[in-house]
Image (cartoon, rainbow, N blue to C red; front, side, top):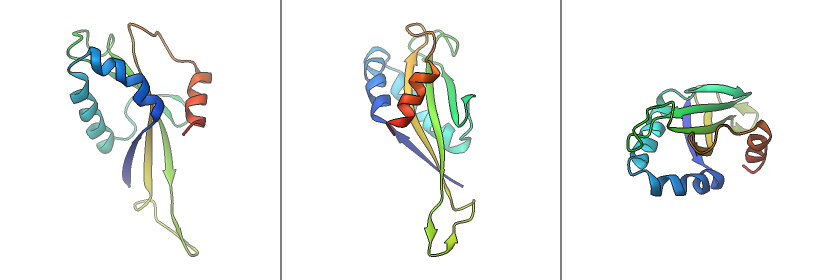
Length: 121
């Protein structure tokens, strides 16, 4: 299975102030991308096909519990060639990064807000 990670506009918007505030965050997001490529089901499933990942921010110095939260949505895509569908090994598993927030600033994100972010993909 090929894992493809896509960053949504909402994620970029939410990440921008955090990237300015925390110098270590760009490197941690690169590491998260590598980790998701190896294990696409990181984190806790909070809704069907929606996962919340606890992300430590080293420059914040509070570990995972006081770090950031990354919300992502999983979508499996199959391509049809004529009448033959690709096998599961060839199918793309697409992970959409839909939101990131600082746990110290926002306690949680509502299911309604998550649903709106998914609809905008």
